Image 1 (cartoon, rainbow, N blue to C red):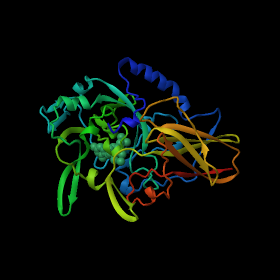
Image 2: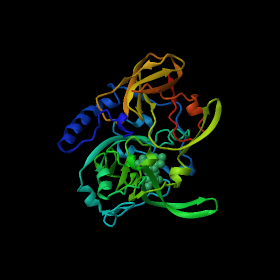
Image 3: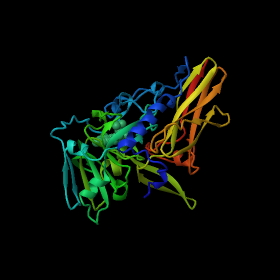
Image 4: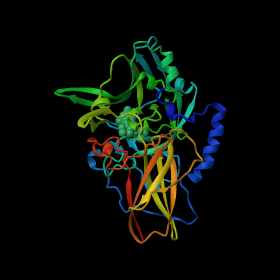
Length: 388
Ligand SMILES: Nc1nc2c(c(=O)[nH]1)N[C@H]1C(S)=C(S)[C@@H](COP(=O)(O)O)O[C@H]1N2
Ligand SMILES: [Mo]
């Protein structure tokens, strides 16, 4: 499976194993954003501008990085992105349909889905547009999602041999235009059959121990650990198996990356659909206790081997990574102590390195600099802070 290099140790808890896992998680919460007695948060000098009116219905509940204190992002601090409306669904009349290129179409109520085997996964979900605009810098959160595995449901529906991909439909819909033709369509995204069958994917009805909040997809959403937010279809009501490529707006027209790349000394324009997460880190906050400053951040998108931090044009310093919580698809919280910084404004940049030695790209790396659309903005993030 293409996923296997990411799966050093799954945090997929079953039955009694779930209890052990949760105990480990709870004990680690206090350390995740390390705090010292009496310390204060030094607010960033470069606060993001407010969400512009044109985007304010699509993007909601962006948290302030300075306000995040825990490895698991509380539901009330978790961002919400919705491209159409945020449907209010009556769970008693709602059902999930599985059809298309299958031998045995299924219809499952929420009770029937909850009666199936339960699985939890801790997954850091990031909108691929995050850091694509100055106001869009905290569309990422880490939650403990609970639901039932997707693969056995597809197997029960008897996927036909000729099948190519699985399309996930939400109940939210809008008018879409191609050339001069207009048509009402549901939000939808597809995955290749092999990707959909990954043991990591769940149909989730819980987020951090509570029923899925309405802005995050109540009553059911796909959680595809390792994939950008867009793949994690909310307000799910239909799954179809197809033998031809799905070409909907959020697959093939929006959420596509245009990049100029070199091929034998020639520049070629490459266009790809946004898919798996990319290696990324951000400085989250600066705290201080007297003269003792500390920089705290998060890193995700790939198994994190190390994180380095640069202040102004100084040397890259190794950050401590909190390894007390281990979950393959969850962010790592890191920190560096910053003793007696000189008064004035400073620039703080972080870069993550994965276990394959890949380094989060600098903003002037061609992979970022030659990108023409704003999605998949995983370049190094620089924040500014004022020391008195
Ligand atoms: N049905 C539906 N699912 C959706 C979307 C949507 O607009 N409709 N937005 C996607 C995008 S772009 C992102 S980033 C994530 C955001 O998940 P969240 O709102 O729970 O943070 O949901 C994804 N799933
Ligand atoms: Mo997104």
